[in-house]
Length: 185
Image 1: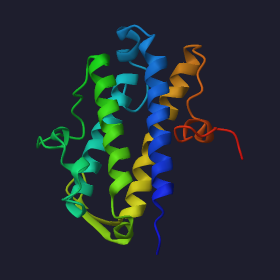
Image 2: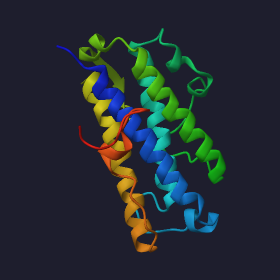
Image 3: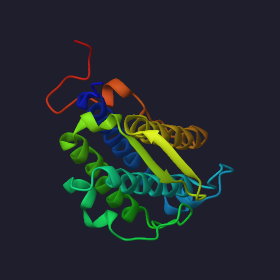
C-alpha cells in the first residue's frame, strides 16, 4: 500500500504552522497566565503544552525503533533517556518556544526523507504504563498529529475564555507549502 509522503508532509506543515501561531498568541500573555490553573486535565496552558511536547518526543523515539538510520530521529534532543510522561520540563515559556520549534522541525525533516513504504510496518512498543502496544506506523503517525490538534483545541478554549482572539486551527490555511497559496486551486 502507498503511504503518501504528501499526506504526512501536509500534517507536519500544518502542525508546525498551528504550533507557531499558537505560541505567537501565547507569547503576548504574562507567564502567570500561562501557568495559572484552568481546570483542564493538565491544569494549565503550560501543563497542556508540556504534555503535548513530551508525548511528541516519546513518539519520535518510538519511531526511531523502526527508522534507526534516519538522521532527524537521531538528533541530540531525542538522545537523553528517562523522560517521563508527566515531567514538565519547560516551565519557562521561551524554553518551550525553542523546543517546540526543534521538535516540529524533526517531524518535518524526518517525513521528508523517511521510506514511506515502511509506514505499513507494525510499530511495537510499551506505553507509558508499560502495557505492550502494536500499531501500524502510519496509524501511529496520524495519531501523533491528531493528538497535537486535540490539545491545541484545549488551549483554544482557554484563550476563548480569556477573550483572546485567535485562529490557528485552519488546516488548509496553515498547511500551505512554501510558495503555495492557502486558497483552493
